[in-house]
Amino acid sequence: MSARSGRVKGGGGMHEIAYFEIAGPDVEKLASFYSRVFGWTPAPGPFPAYLSLAEGAGAGLPGGFRQDAPDRVLYIRVPDLQAALDAAVREGARVLIPPTRVPGVVHFALFEDPAGNRTGLVQ
Image 1 (cartoon, rainbow, N blue to C red):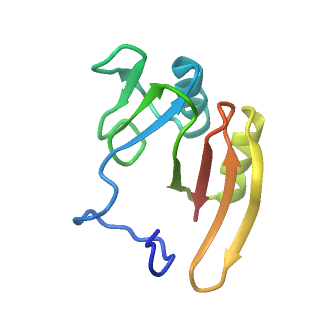
Image 2 (image 1 turned 60 degrees about the vertical axis):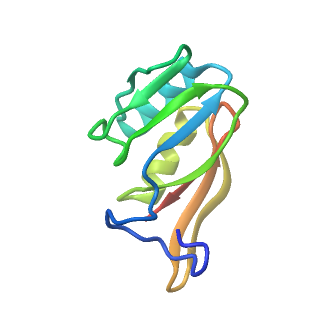
């Protein structure tokens, strides 16, 4: 999402998100949540209490889960906004903003995962 326009951008060019981290007090439980909801496949990371998502692990870009206080907001592009939100809720998420359309800008929703992280979905 561009800070200036609010529009979701795609591609693979410079100045786009290249890596992300999601933190929570129980890194295994947190990684398992995202694996069940989105099919991501985390692997042991380079540090204790860290799980990595290499490029091609299903997340669209490399990232990781770290054991820490809940931290970050990121937006995940999904093919079906309501289905993804329903899956998150089934796994223990709490809806913060239901599917909302901003005409000409974005269709999005926001939830809080079991560790307290706010996560956005865009379609």
